[in-house]
Amino acid sequence: MPAPKKYPDELRERAVRMTIEARRDPVAAPGAIRRIADQLGVHPEALRAWVKRAEVDAGVQPGRSSSEEHRIAALERENRELRRANQILKSAASFFAAELDRPSR
Image 1 (spheres, rainbow, N blue to C red):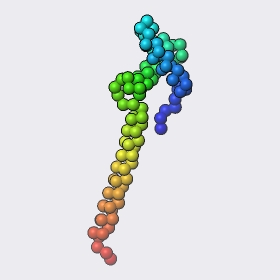
Image 2 (cartoon, one colour):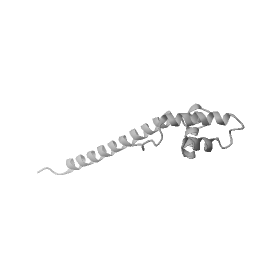
Image 3 (cartoon, helix red, strand yellow):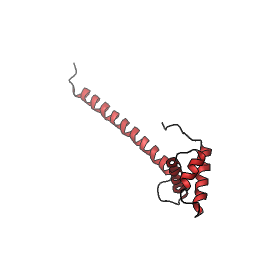
Image 4 (cartoon, helix red, strand yellow):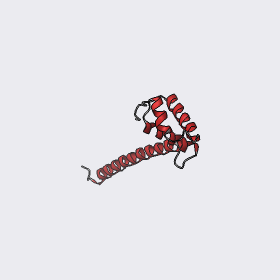
């Protein structure tokens, strides 16, 4: 279960949009993340991560997009469940095989 979000989605979107716009201007680009984070009351590293995620999702930076990350996580969960079910079935099969090998009374 993911941790609860500390900042609302609207604030995240606004902060990312402001930061991307500020980075386009060569005069305002240096220190844009720290300045905007202070203005909005957001931790600078949180804002930096949001901006990086938005740039990866937009294809500006290399990396896996959010949708790919969610899909991979779902596949890994399914894989764990299937491995667990397989292990249970193997244990059950070995149990019943041992029962068949015992002499009947």
